[in-house]
Image (cartoon, rainbow, N blue to C red; front, side, top):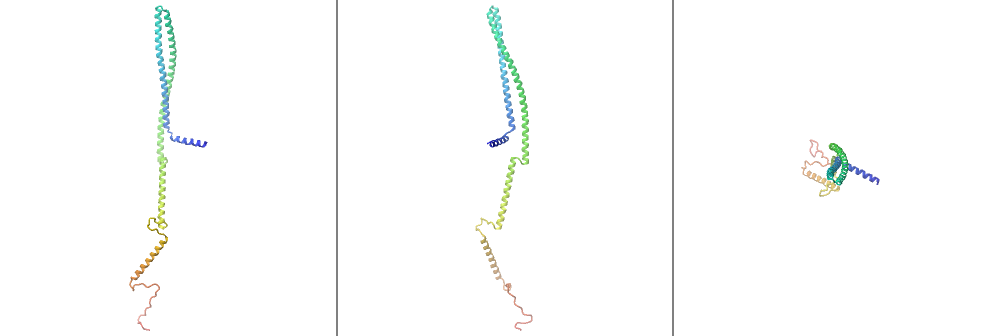
Length: 255
């Protein structure tokens, strides 16, 4: 099981190496950084919105404090010290709320400044990564194209390798067919093979009988030609001796 697991990991690793494209990985990393930058910007906007809301509340509390101050003075002028005291008590509570809001505003301002600085740094990092990413992608594309061209020129690419194997197989098959055709021609010329398309199949005995018949036909034709020759021009038969001739000056019948 350990060997099977190791083999599976090796095969899966090789498959991932073939399927992985560094350019896609760089684009994916850039997209993730842009998402992070967007979240930081959204956080800065939320903090700024909260700070702005506190500013509005501070303005409202300041208006309330000013109004209560005027009411206290008006009540005191009217001889209503109790109303003046109540107005001043409320004003004190309003000023306490304003102090708390001012502290929250200072905290939000510091947080906003911190987030803004972080956003600027992250923006610079993302911009630098984008420039580096495009440079790496261009270099990778150029190297890939150069590799493909070199493989095509040297014939070691996968496609050219398949073409080379196909050409070799075609050449081997052609040579095999040519050798087979030559061997069949030699066998047919020597008589070892017969033409299967012939209407009458001949065997060795029939060939010998045909040779004997052809020899008899030749002898018969020769005898016929001898019979047609004149008697004077007929050549002597083999084995016959020529007749003796008389000496010159003697007639027949002399002893």
